Amino acid sequence: MKILLAALGRYNLDPYGLRIICAYLKQHNHQAELLLLPFGSWEEHSFSDKVFDEEKIKRQIEIINKFILERKPDLVGMSVLTNFFEHAAILTDELKKNKDIPVLWGGTHPTVDPEGCLEHADMVCIGEGEDAMLELAQRMESGRSYSDIQGIWVKENGKIIRNPAACLPQDLDHFPFPDYSIDGHFVLHEQTIHVMNTELLYAYLPHNFGTDSIGYSVVATRGCPYTCTYCVNSGLRKIYKHDRGKIVRRRSIPNVIDEISNMKTAYPKLTHVNIADETFLLGGDLQWIDDFCTQYKERIGLPFFCCLRPENICDEALTKLTDAGCFFVQMGIQSGSQRTLREVYHRRMNLDLLVEKAHILNKFQDKIIPCFDIILDNPYETDDDLINTINFLLRLPKPFRLQLFSLVLFPGSQLY
Image (cartoon, rainbow, N blue to C red; front, top):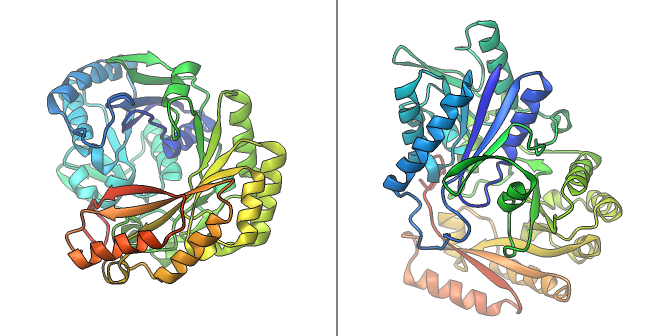
């Protein structure tokens, strides 16, 4: 069966999850193609950019739809983030005017707002989609009904069939590595859809530290144990009940290292690795950290960065990480107001503990510079809360970087 998977995003678009699904479908003898649709470029990016420019989008979508119709897929799957809902809606609506190709949406936004997405798509995938997508492809290819697949909602004759979320896969090593082979891959680049090549792939990999940096993102752990009210993970926990399996799951260390090693061999211009786990030092398991760092240093050797939770920061862990090549760590503070953290964000963090952990990070300033996240533009904060945040930041030892975000009320989050 021929399946076209499309990822919608901006500039350095690197859809890790969709690449795994692409590889999984290929592994089971389906003809899966990948189309990257970056609406914008790195050079155009600024914090004041409009995410949605309808006239520009419509010109691009005309090019995209022409390409899709020429490829003649049996199914189109789109990975949709909340910021690109409008793009996906226009693309799907225009595509279905020309040809009745089944269109499925998956990703974060369809997971938390499936009914809204089914106003445009024929189907939506709820949650992690590897097994659901494979079963859908197999049933469609054999002409069987697919209206009862767990993890898939279907719109039939104007009615919505709401199937429960599929059980979460517990053995993450079972899945193939993300598909970076560029075989059957395409990208919208400079208003034209190009066959993917190595240089284009480099251009659309993450450039976390400037245009000369080329990063590779790897995910060693799925799921998050926390329920911060601004985060979509608080909504995902409502979808995945206790009988759906453990939410937080970790791959084996050799499996993760093998993936990075394969990419390093295939793409030698990579300059660093981004360990994209939401909480890399989950549980503070020092033996796991020691094993990972030993294997990473021996087989990979590239500089890497990761996100840390304050509870898991200690001298021993940072010594192992920096020795293995960690040069940058990101930690979410979000607010220097204890009231905001507890009452609004439901983050059980003590500000004195945060300062203590920042001082531990500061001991390693010759090797790493920490980056702290702060959320601004929160209508639930008072002037006193903002002043408390400024005073708190003045307590932190220098040097450090700040990442400042405007509060976004994502559908599915508790705060929404």
